[in-house]
Amino acid sequence: MPPRVMRVLFDLLRALAYASFFALLWGWLASLVRPLDRYLPVVLPEWSQGAGLVLVVLGAVLALACVTGFIWWGGGTPAPFDPPRRFVARGPYRFVRNPMYWGGVAVLAGFGLVLYSPSILCLSLVMLGCAHLFVVLYEEPNLERRFGDDYRAYRRTVGRWLP
Image (tube, rainbow, N blue to C red; front, side):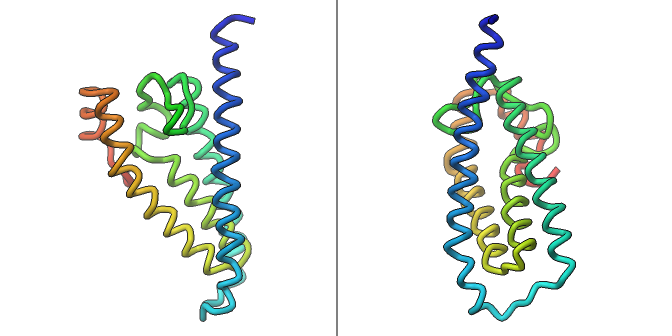
């Protein structure tokens, strides 16, 4: 097998392992907060289940596109301890600097809607807040150090959270 194919397969396996851990972590947190639903005076409407399914699918597709881009174009994984070796500003990253977080938040919020769980919806907001802090305090300074002018130019032209 050619070395490039071996490298991509190795990156894919690592990325799948990291993504699985990330999904299991937030799933576990969702299971911990769900019992709080009985204390929240919120009843989600019937249509929320359908909207939730749409959010789960769209969020998963977005996150998968981001992971795939990091593997294919970046030669690495989304994990901060095993990052891409090349700067990725293609695919979903053309429109917003942090689409993978949006995908994760959409999946979690979608599950909250599917399960009629206001506490999981609140957890998705906590996830977004944690992502924001991580991006501002760690990820952006690290990307600027690693990729210099390329990242600074990208940051000037592409929004952090909104296109």
